[in-house]
Length: 195
Picture 1 (cartoon, helix red, strand yellow):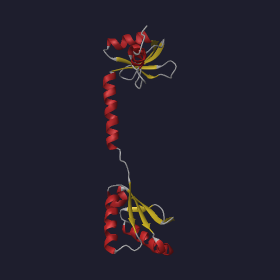
Picture 2: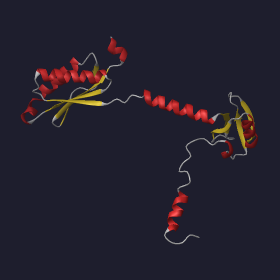
Picture 3: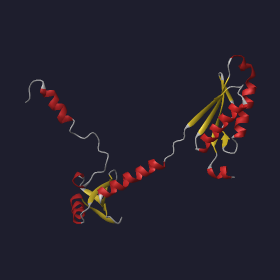
Picture 4: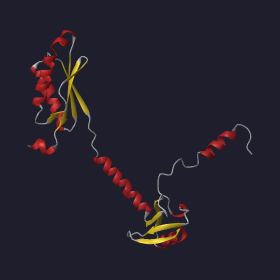
């Protein structure tokens, strides 16, 4: 028995040696079931047999015995090259992540008294965002006495949505929230944009 200040650290080291979670399948000697339903590499069922017999068949073919359906009665095992299977699975996951598209919401802010040139710059930026496939939130902020003329901001937002009409669809009509009035523009699907 270890005594003194090292006792706790040795226990901690031994405790951390155990795996936290088993994320993969049970393979070869890890399969402890009495009987399993076996599927060969071609996908044909070989029937129900003992796990030792199934492991022997897998070793004869220089392949692995993998439990693919542990909740079935009896569990379903397959003879396969597990290393190759894991490699192809990670390759598919990587490809799926690469093709995944994250849509961002870009925001454009204006005031009701915006000049024509500034309006056109904001319009070009919104069209660029929409052509990249991102959603766009267009906001008009009212200050002080401008709150008495919210219809000017509403007309400005409707004009903005009309100018972006060939690239985008307005999700909702202009909505006033506090001192801000905003609309959301979503890009049109590719086939509609071509028309």
